[in-house]
Length: 320
Image 1 (cartoon, one colour):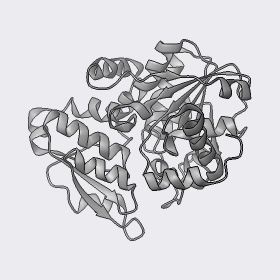
Image 2 (spheres, helix red, strand yellow):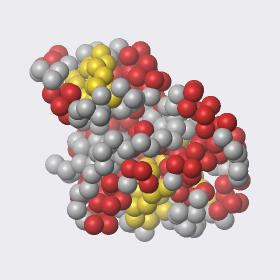
Image 3 (cartoon, helix red, strand yellow):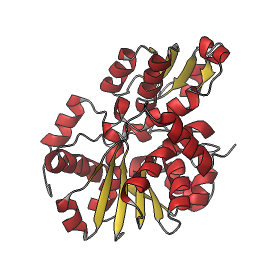
């Protein structure tokens, strides 16, 4: 069931005309500060505001007519929810999304705007799995990350990056449930075996980093990180072994470092990048990732509430 590089290539062909070929941006300020050449893959400019449409479309497009007629269902704190709703609208499939009641208002509103039925649950009182089980009938479950077609679709972001900029010395990728990281790592190791693949997550949601170093699956319960896209309780049955096999290093960054990166993008590059999407750059700016040379960074999304962005921007601007 593990996705292959060939399946990532097939996903890329399937996505043509349905997802954006997102641009690469650079920053002289960032390059000068790091003494390296950094290439930013702007998935914050993707359809739905995040990379998630890649995996969602790749998985849903392969459903048969009977499965499509019965509809699709998932649980998600936001970006996967939006992606599933958007793909459902594109393909004419009824979509149900189970979301925590503390999810970003912007993400919830967008999900509903794409036509999905949203069911809220209290993450303090129940799990997302139990909340979904209470609603699911005959719908096909499309998980946020732990699915071979979803992982293959997410891997197309790194495939595009290497096709756009060539060889890299390091690739930094945000990590929540590990779909983007594992898919990107598979692509990176085929296209550039010497590239060092680094996964980055918040220190408050460090289950993947602990899992990587202990080689045993670790969990975290309802972490209160600003990077809401990384609040998955653990890596998946597929993503965990893939990360152990293909990823070179896992690291964490502080909440302050994440906010600093969000401010950097806003003030220096005029980009809106959500906290989860800024993790790789946070690792670079804070010195957590002392890598050199040609560095790729995937900015995984840009869906952030106006109130949250205002709060981050109004805090002290230190090194922007």
